[in-house]
Amino acid sequence: MGIIVCIKPVPDPKYWNRLRFDANTNTLVREGIPSIINPLDKNALEEALRLRERLGSEVIVLSLAPHDAIPVLKEALAMGADRAVLVSDKTFAGSDTLATSYLLSAAIKRVGAYEIILCGDQTSDSGTAQVSAQIAEFLDIPNLMHVSAIELKDGVQCRVKAHIEHGYMLVEIRPPMVLSVTNQLNEPRYTTLMNILDAEQKSIEVWSSKDMDLAEPWVGLAGSPTQMGDFVVPTKKRKAEMLQGTPEQQAAALTDRLHRLGFY
Amino acid sequence: MAGVVESKIWIVVEHREGRPVDVSLELMGKAIDLVKQIGWKVAAVLIGNGLDTLSTQVLSYGVHEVLIADEPMLVNYCNQAHAKILENAVKKFQPEAVLMGATALGTDLAARLAARLRVGLSAHCIDLELTEKGDLLGIIPWLGGNYLCRITCPHTRPQMATVIPGVFGMPKTSGIQGRTIPLEACIEQKDFTYQILEIKRIKGPKSDLEKAEVVVAGGWGIGGEDGWSMVENLADLVNGAVGATRPAVDESWAKEHQMIGTSGITVRPKLYIGIALSGHPHHLVGVKEPELTVGINIDPNAPIFENCDIGLVGDYREILQAMIKSIQAQYRGKNK
Image 1 (cartoon, rainbow over the protein chains, first blue to last red):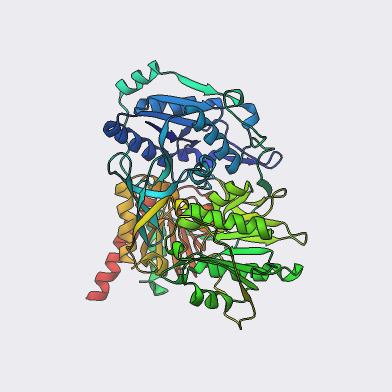
Image 2: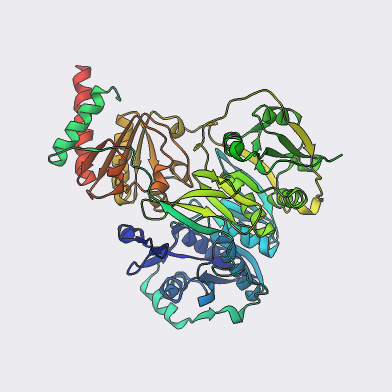
């Protein structure tokens, strides 16, 4: 029984102020900005590692990304994943959510003996939060989103807590299945130096378009039904009055104003 | 007899406890507005069991048609069963656009349906536009910048989009002019690939945050749990609720339900104070027309200062500490 965790490298939020948008190419310039594992994907991986302890299954991390995602996959190996697969090919560039989901589902089919596929509920960058549901659709297996608890009944039946607005659902679901998880699920482990050294022994498999059964042109920019149109700068609606002085003076001016306006 | 569906835009209505969720109604209002200039009609799609009251209610919002799949098996919800019904209906009647609320279930169902139909889906839109040619443009806030992006699906039909709750106002009810059209349910027990045992409500229909007159929100710049408790402290003192940006939730300083913006909730406070957050549209789209917006950030070039009424530049710790002190002093003054 295999547990597959889909992980996505995202720009480190520490450097978000350095992200630039290139209006000529309609793309986001991420150059020089380090990537980290999308935070919720760590919760997914943590859960996979815990499930492994119970089930004795193999944990495979899977990422669709350019080659510079290798360090992120190494980190996943250091956390304890058994195998890492990078799905990477020039022809995959520009894949939208649907194409991405299709490619990941093709890679998952190649992995073969999967039972549980875990994803972060959404990504901290441009996330559409749709990939998990679409992978499930392409694999024709059930899925749940916003999962904050997974209870394995007997290895066959699972009881899952899935959040919806103002509450949650308790759901019975059977593997093979795709679950996308929230950060309420668990506390991801830290990696130790030993783990990092261990991870150096593990290799990362890189799969290109030739390694997967991609029957139709559903990948890359050409295979992506959604297109980024023009960008608009939102109209500036408010003209800020900047308070002057030391932090204390600014704070005093503000509390004074709020008090006079009757906010407290 | 199933009639011919005339509507080109379909709103898939999410309902809970026999009532449509607000965003479904908001979408109907918006869609009816959008189609005026090109003469299309709008339909609501209802899937479930025992939907008579609900369909009358939905019709009262002025939709041209209500498409109904009403069948005992559908007393239970399952995304795969719903996606199958929608897929069949879409293939049969070929609408130009299918819209859903970007709710927990809507996001999931829309994604599955789009993959089933292999069509494009603009996710978590904050606005919709419709061209004269019938192209639907979904407006989304774009990562890490002060940009909004128009997403189009030029080559696939139907065009799909999910829209975050609260961005369009609630429409008014009008006289009922529309009609109902039954949809083939075409499902079997095996399409229910999971079973919902229980649905628990953990909060009222609206959380305190959504109703709060004062919202104090923190972002990634808060930097840790200590800092976060200062945010909570300040919120307490001004009788406010605490909101958060996604990075703050990712860091686990704040809870998921406190997240304001694209993938979170929409708040409508009188006073909004944004602390150590950049003020990107992802977050600010969820803050609807506050009377007063205050921004506190160490970076004088932070986008928040282009979207607030009062700006404070400096280390938020020092500013908050001073604010907390001075508010406490004001309270003491009052009590004397």
